[in-house]
Image 1 (cartoon, rainbow, N blue to C red):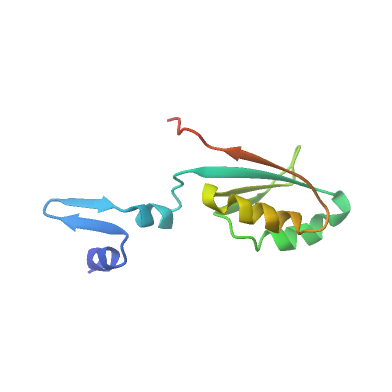
Image 2 (image 1 turned 60 degrees about the vertical axis):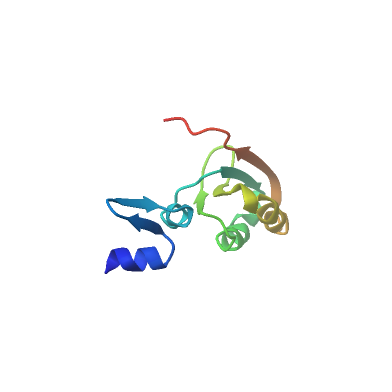
Length: 106
């Protein structure tokens, strides 16, 4: 019954003797085909306001970090332009850096 539901939802392909996870299935599990890591620096006096707004941005994962940056967002490459627009609409954002994955190293 579970396999039928996953197949109908487009997450897997099922055949005689095999089950393939589709691209939609991989995305649903959090797998990133072409991820971007977006690093964000915010003015200290705007940290709390920025935090509340950044956590509502459409990204796969959002981390509050320490060190040279304040936030790190993981998102799909296709979302980058939109997310950067949303980030720069937040008061206090000083800088962003985009790290675009070119190869998976395992």
